[in-house]
Length: 352
Image 1: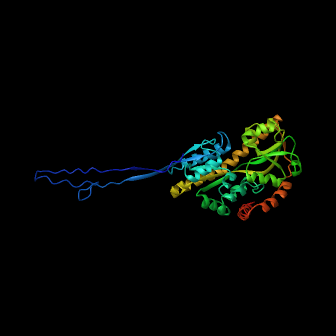
Image 2 (image 1 turned 30 degrees about the vertical axis):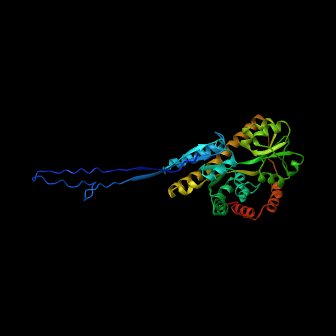
Image 3 (image 1 turned 180 degrees about the vertical axis):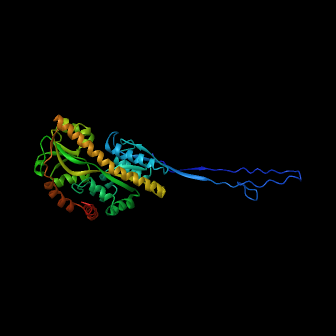
């Protein structure tokens, strides 16, 4: 829940002691240092601004988004000693993505970690961040969101919603799984592939030539087990978290889309001092560096375990260029003017 700044004022009052001597032989006492010449006490109040912020997300303890994302933000900003503390509410405790973005806009939640597709529901150009092959890798995403090239997108979002974007990170590329290898777009033919029920994800599926079936993540294991769908795509950490190696035999490393997290803050941003804003921005940037590194390490541990156990055959020779050649012109035709401007801004930071 939202915590607004509290002002703790410690008022120091000086006690004026007047000593009067009735004897004509004793001089009157001089006014003390804490009293004015006319006998009135002076006070020097000292004020310190302290802010407790709520930070919500949908992830579980132990996931990179928590350990190297949310927790790093909390640790870094509290260590800065600028009067900010953060209370974290994870595992969708404060609602699902769609509900939380509305709560941030309303000021009921201070900060949130969201995917770009959820944010695109309130600002459509944000959908481009989740486009297939829009970003080359984690470094490209970092370069974009820490450069002036992102200003039009982030400032447009803030102008529309009143919500400030502090930063973003990639928490793993999305990969295909099925009971057959998927090396080229032709290998998707005849496969019913689960995609999240999001316009951007479904557009990516169409661009790659996939037959998309909408299934909620919570229902995915059962859908694969029962044959409702033949395959799916997700980051490696998500695939492992619900044991999809039990119902899928192959993972094809297509890395066709980055899974982005954006760190947002509502109207309370404008109530923070410049020093507090700088400290919070620096904390988020540190998480932007650490979270992708943690995610990559976790992914490699999972892949190594699959290689050793043989539970999942890892297909590394995916023709990513063949997929890219299909996707780029398709998305350019499908995007509107504002989305194309965002796409050009993102591509302008590739290779920097």
